[in-house]
Amino acid sequence: MEIRLGKYLADCGVAARRKADELIREGRVKVNGVVAVLGQKIDGGRDKVMVDGRRVALEAEKVTLMLHKPRGFLTTSADTHGRSTVMELVPDKPYRLFPVGRLDQWSEGLLLLTNDGELALELTHPSSLIEKEYIATVHPEPTQDQMAKLRRGVHTANLGDMRPAFIEKLTDRDVRIVLTEGRKREIREMLNTVEIKVERLKRVRLGQLELGALKPGQWRQLLPADLVLLKKKHRGRYQ
Image 1 (cartoon, rainbow, N blue to C red):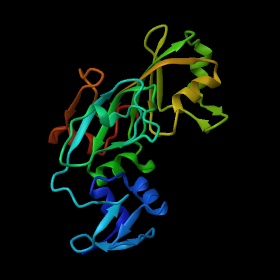
Image 2: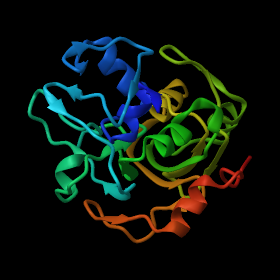
Image 3: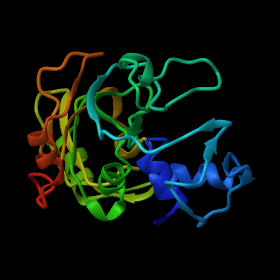
């Protein structure tokens, strides 16, 4: 049975679908010894697929881990400059995991790693509108006027118009922020427009899945009940 090469790579746990397509564009994927092209279809049971010189094949078991990412680690499978990545925090397994979505180097909290390409695509596709809840420790204390501006939406120099799905003050310096998008440095960019600096940023929820009591650097494998929460049609609390 033929399947698109990008989907096959995602199903093999090489990378999420969009990243898999990037690997193909960069000429890093070969099928039966020939450099692959975007949109190519293959027979997963017969064709020999290699990425960066290593053969890849479908994983029999779909696995998803939830990691409490500490600050200072890159959310990537590998780094060419030798910096620490989240993959150093999870055990060696007979399958390849990849991070789902973004969490920048100096942010912490809930991060998923999986070899399930379909799940990764479902969670990261813009149409999913899945909520991502963060607790930001900021300086100085936000004023009522600043909070009102953020609720109405702001214009950022790098990302254009932005508005959180929900925002509230928890303490003088802690703010709860809920997003339904996943643009790079989104919260830092928004708060910067009203002259508020983010000193610490922690993601505590994805959809209806919560980080819970996991400590920085700890991880656990998601149970079937956790996956049900992730796949629920209702993607959060504030929509």
